[in-house]
Structures are given as structure tokens and as C-alpha cells.
Length: 390
Ligand SMILES: Cc1cc2nc3c(=O)[nH]c(=O)nc-3n(C[C@H](O)[C@H](O)[C@H](O)COP(=O)(O)O)c2cc1C
Ligand SMILES: CCCCCCC(=O)C(=O)O
Image (cartoon, rainbow, N blue to C red; front, side):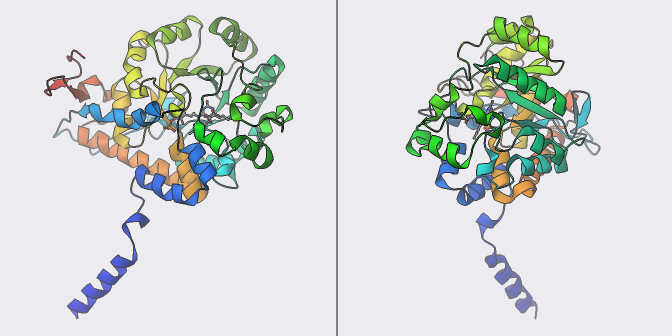
């Protein structure tokens, strides 16, 4: 009888294959990628030109080792933190990414529902598949939204977008600064992405300006992104027309961190656009320390790029970030199972982050610091990050 029970249990086990388990963001990426069309998969899962930065982002976390403290009574560990005056479950928000309609028919509306279910704030792209006013009601009052914008060549567009965002209750502008022109992604040309976009996936927020005659995204972007954007001209202008917080997204250096402070922005997002703009720039986790050092606590610092594990989030907080954002993981959740897939991804990262905190001996986000990290020096010996000569 016992043998029979074992046989039944084994038969049930073999019905479920290893790939049916989604236990990590990496599992989710694989499962979601199978569900996407070639066009969508290659648009989402790629970077600029040789993709050096795209691959560097997730890999760079490995060189930061964790230094745990034991016997620290972590039974009451609390991974929550406060962003813009609102307590959020853990230091994570969703980055703005274009065209969620390619992953799921409900696009950003489903992403917003997934974020609301997990109580996670969401950035929405200028290039969203639905107009902002259609997306917000799906989570209104439950989470904060951030409006991703560019400096548009036509300044009345900039002004209208800002005023619209303010009216819709967006908490902050994420001004994308690393895209005065669009980066080159070769498979977008191979897949004739621009033709697909104008026909099947228009940009409803800016649709009037879209020209069907254009054949590549880089040309299309010149309609919406102004190569003459500058700190001196555009930040004071934005400041003069809005009370929303202004975060500059795409900062990678101490110099630009200082410039951001000088121009009076409310914060920066250390970002390389997920490796989609300038190939060859550092992984964001490697650029973070010089930005943190330059800021000296004067402005909040957010970061995105390659975050796939709870321990990645822990490392960024330890290096001085206030909050981490994820882009592609939300797209994978959406493609895998709509709003429920987005929620699943966010809960997975929440649980991994909390477990990392507990196994590190931390009870609150405020306790996490550089003393929790180490690196291997050039001779292969471990050094505490606090004292390491890098
Ligand atoms: C498919 C895709 C579309 C994106 N669209 C935008 C966009 O419209 N505006 C923007 O500022 N950043 C955009 N980004 C960059 C993200 O905001 C974010 O910086 C990046 O995805 C973070 O890296 P991760 O995907 O590894 O988490 C996009 C990224 C991806 C993957
Ligand atoms: C014509 C513009 C194409 C959308 C660009 C969105 C974006 O930033 C990306 O990384 O892709």
C-alpha cells in the first residue's frame, strides 16, 4: 500500500516538469520569453549594439559579496521603507518601459493592477500603449505613479505632457536624460520594428506626431526627443511649470549628480536605460558609489538596471541607493500572466529581499550599509568594502 502511494506521488511529480516552476525572475524570463512573439522578445530582451552594458548590468552584482551577521533576532524583520512620504512594502518600484501592449492586450492597465495588488509604485512611459488617463484608474489611490518624459522638440508638447501629468495626480516626473537621441538596437531594424509600431502599436500619448513614412525607430524618436536638451535650459523651465518632483533618469557620474543638485532637481535615477542607449557604459551598480559619494545625502538616489534578485536590491541599498526599480521583470510578468504575473514577480522579489535581510541579520532597511559588503581584491583575497582600496 505504502509502495502504491509512493508510485502515485512519483507519477504526479513527473507530470510537472522543472520548467513549470517559476521560482525566480530568471525562471520568469524564460517562461515569458516563450510566450512572446519574436518581435516582442527581441525588443524587450536586448540592448544597444554589442550589448556589453546590457549583459554587464545583472552580472556586476556578483562581485559584491555579502557579510552576514548571525544570532541577530530577525523574527520581526521589516523590509518596508518610505518613498515620497508613503510607506511601501520594500524598496522597489517599477521602471517606465514602452509598449506594454506588446506583452499583453491590457498593456499598462494590467501592469498597474499587478502593481496595485503588490502595493508597488509604477513609472509609466511616454511611449505607453494606452494613454495615461486610461491607465491610472486601474490603481488610483492605491499606489504612486511616476510620469516618464523627455524634453520634446516642440516645447508645447513638453508643457502639455507636464500639465497633463500633474492633473492626473502623478507624484513625480522621471525626466529621461540619457536619450537625446535613441540608442541603436540592431534587431529593431532587422525586425522592422518601426513599421509594426505605427501600424499595430501606436504611441497614443503622442500619436498626432507619428509619421507612417518613417522606417526606423531612431528617426521616429527625433520627433519626440530633443537632442538640444540641457541642464541649464530645461530643468529651470520644468521647475517653473510644475510642482511635481523632478527626478533625472540616466545619471551615471559624480559630475552629473553634482549638476543635478546644482539645478535643484529632487533626485536622480542612476540608470543606463537597461543597456539600451550607450553601449560600453558601466553596470549601474558599479556607477552607484560615485553618485552616492557626490550626493552626500542631499538628494534621494534611485537606481535601475539588471536587478533580478532580492540580494541585488540589498546590495544597492547597502551601497547607498534609496530605492531600486525594475523594468524588464515587469514586462516578463505581464507577458507570462497579465496582472497576476506582475504581482507574482513583485511578491517573489519582496520575499527574496526580506529573506536576504533576515539571513544578513538586518531588521530594518535603515540598518543596511556598506559594512554588509565585501569584494575580492586583485590578489583574490576578501576585503571589507568599507576599507577596500578598489
Ligand atoms: C522594452 C523597454 C522599453 C523601455 N522604454 C523606456 C522608455 O520609454 N523610457 C525610458 O526612460 N526608459 C525606458 N526603458 C528603460 C527602463 O526605464 C529601465 O531603465 C530599464 O529597463 C532598467 O533595466 P532592467 O530592464 O534591466 O530592469 C525601457 C526598457 C525596456 C527594456
Ligand atoms: C520612437 C521611440 C521608440 C520607443 C523607445 C522607448 C525606449 O526608451 C526604449 O528603450 O525602447
